Length: 126
Picture 1 (tube, rainbow, N blue to C red):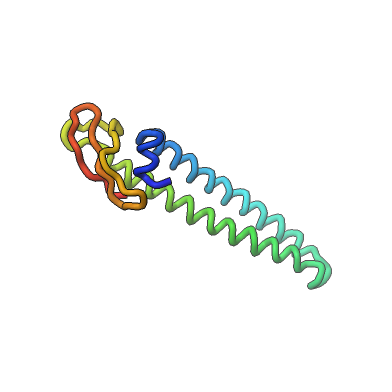
Picture 2: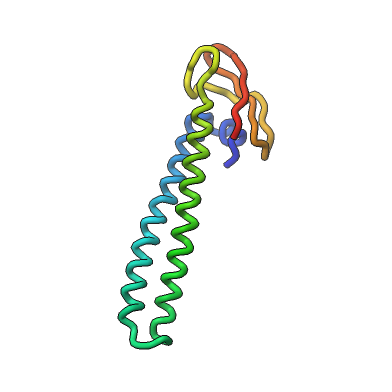
């Protein structure tokens, strides 16, 4: 979910929480894929021939590919959420995360937010 849309729908804190939960779900998928790779390799090494072990090696490749994708997605989502969270302090009164969306593009990388406490406005780069 884009930053502007997430802040508009849920507020900053809920958007941040959802981003972290989504990223950690990808980390859990990475862990499950690692188990799948290990189990598939064990079956592949116990196979008696190429035709018998080919589906097992295909499962190894599939689990490894999904695991690598999930790990990259985890790292991206986590770093993106942290980069945005580091900009969520009001420069004027130092309130963290108490902001509202003033102006945001649907797919833009920069949103204008305002502090709920003091009303100061600033940009957050997504």
